[in-house]
Length: 387
Image (cartoon, rainbow, N blue to C red; front, side, top):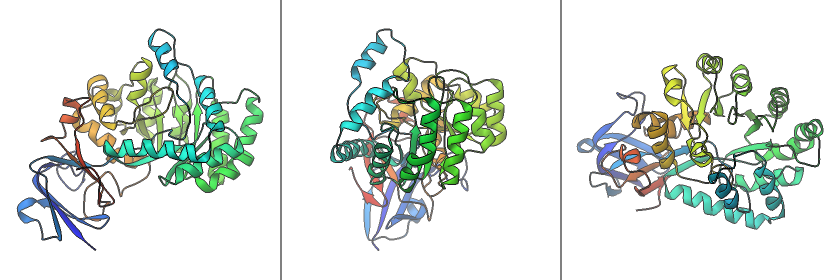
């Protein structure tokens, strides 16, 4: 197995809890990669010999971003909807049905090609682990094939048949379909099951039924909740012990207390608020209450068509009062925890060799220089990409 040492790292973010501080920073550092894993981390002066060497030239290195919430399997474009929203029309979940029609009409090859382009776009911006949901098929055939497409790119695939209720059926009949034939067809291609628990989508009882059926089929539960208004979705996630609940834009004191007590991670998606002009979640209040916070892109064609985790970090720092360190940790280590993963989002011996070389001396530049392409190199599974 070929080993590679990346040396002369000015600032290395490890996220290693065995090291001091939230980010486990090491200055004047080196990392040794042995195939797909990290073999050694420490001061550059102490680095062991390796077969190949990369000179970081004083730049910063961080773990690859872990994007735990995305909707990449779709066809069509909703830029007209975005333009209308930016000129005064409020966001609703109805636009999802527009994407459903176009996704159903696309071929498998078209969907696969589109996902491949978006995944490549994400990797070029430093994302090395991602989750992909279905949810734009809403039929037995189209949900299963969406997940089959997604599984070509990640093991973190999520069955989101319960995205919205199609116009040609009742909520009761559709939940029966989702928990029956659709789940049976989708489960072989999925690790997770998700529900959009929201006004205009699925209520708490319906979400509970879908998640229970998924658990019976061996799928772990996830939940979209409290994006558009206050509701019971966040507390349902906490009651069920879900690893994470996503959006969390409108939270009551009871919601925050439930998150703190349960340990369920609040995955915040600030790109959505940027793209819809909704209020941003109160990340500062959540963190101060002892809630674990992750950041993800929610890349989708309607409410948030960005694949940039760096943008999400900048928004979290500027608009949600997270520190640069908290935001980076949320986009890496806590994002990994939201996928129940401990092998990514951390640079330590035995962990995945997924890391990003920044064209900057410090991770702080991710928020300090928003919109600037700072990724100089990416290693995924020890394989170099950019740079």
